[in-house]
Length: 212
Ligand code: GRF
Image (cartoon, rainbow, N blue to C red):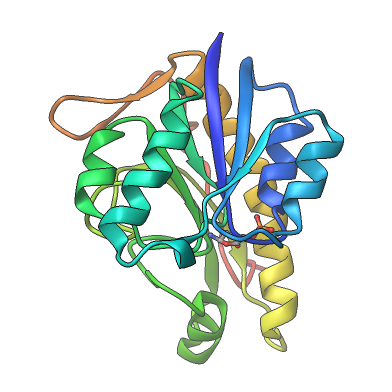
């Protein structure tokens, strides 16, 4: 069974979606860079070992990432999952976990990398928005894509409403992606491409607004 370490920084709802489903993997630990991350209590209640590696205890990114990697590697993970982990990681950290480091991002990448994705999508008037699970590469929010979910943007949408609907889809696609990885149905090739054994029906489409 694959060993999984999850990194969080906050409420941890994506981590909860991973802890409360069957992944065919073992969640070895939840690690946060913030001692007050809400998700830590949930992990503790579920008997998952937790650790805090505070970025504030380190003078620069390189030393924080080195300390973080040391704690992560103590759990011998097959996969390291970024579930709302709000630190930019150094290229050397990312390279150390090549093919094993997975992130969830609240937009249809490569659109809206970075922060405030829902507000930016609303400001642009896009009709379809969503979320992405991808392998992490040193190029922020640009790694090879495993799965995406699209939601319709409504005419009178608000940032809160749109973000809640996208989050609901995050909680569906993240466990699915990790399940595939644990079952060796998806992997990163040596050329840096996603190799997938998953069938996609050719007529799968979301049209927004809906056709009449
Ligand atoms: C999610 O929207 C995720 O896509 C982004 O940060 C948010 C974390 O939420 N990377 P949670 O902590 O999982 O509830």
